[in-house]
Image (cartoon, rainbow, N blue to C red; front, side, top):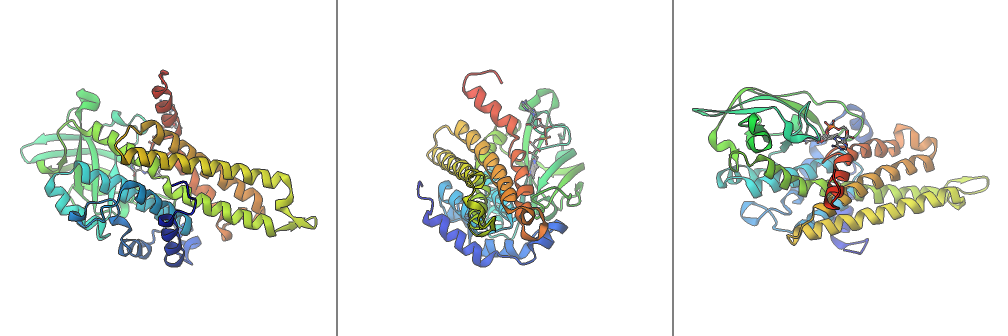
Length: 380
Ligand SMILES: Cc1cc2nc3c(=O)[nH]c(=O)nc-3n(C[C@H](O)[C@H](O)[C@H](O)COP(=O)(O)OP(=O)(O)OC[C@H]3O[C@@H](n4cnc5c(N)ncnc54)[C@H](O)[C@@H]3O)c2cc1C
């Protein structure tokens, strides 16, 4: 894992360079358009099968292999939004379904998801409950037919193109977090309205939208896990999602850094390459340090998680390191490229916009610091 050119990562990167180089990326980014053809190529290449058990169509790889693959895709593919979509499907949706779904739910959906024929989305956040996720107000009222869902979910990655949703709702608001349950709900269920793709600052090629549940009736067997187990399912899901969702961003940072170093070596001002100015080279040295630290923490979190050891601290540290390194590295890239970094045409500014989201999704940075502080024995 200490090898920067790990063969799994390199294989994914060189495949992505060849197959996921979309000439329309700048245009699609402007129009907030998902690349369905790129998604199909990724699925056909078997990427989504990675960590899922072979009996459900998966490749049975461990999570470290999956992280290296997603990192390699981030390194080789300039469409950061597409790679975020892969992370969401593999880590947030498939991994959660495989661990907590009923045998029927798994049989029905997992083979479809790993083949890429179906797209899944993970829906916890609401307009009034983000970091304080367990204060959600979407209700799942028990009825003779199963449950009736009412409420609004927010910021759901891939919602506009999703076929199925993992949804958290309360069966008893008075019980707070212990009243939260998890449901697996097909997108075409009557009473579920998927909103329009919402334009956003970055990661524009990953569509996202709100969900409205208005008297949405689901059968009792749509529930995942026991009634009231939603908070613990969410917490487990976040342990996998938190840091590993940033694997693509760590790969993208390596690409960004490589491009920026190459530019600094060739762009000349005052008769010499700008990389010979210490003001530039030291910024790149700082970005290199941040990248290496983020990568190492990411691998540590993945290794601990894979061997079943406590990984919450490592995951929170990795998420902080990866999101902050990616953002500061992208800002350095813009500065080093000057006006070329600022205009849309070259895509350097896109990386900067894309990486701001890393401070928010998968649990905002303040929440990661709270986790670290709490595990240090400090009140958070
Ligand atoms: C690109 C993107 C994709 C997303 N995809 C999904 C998805 O697929 N599914 C889903 O359910 N959600 C998704 N989200 C939503 C995301 O999980 C939330 O935005 C996130 O949890 C933060 O919630 P919030 O936006 O309501 O901010 P708030 O919770 O209102 O936080 C605002 C600020 O206050 C800080 N803060 C809040 N509480 C504390 C505290 N106790 N201590 C210190 N600081 C604090 C936060 O760190 C943040 O800086 C996505 C968001 C983005 C940007």
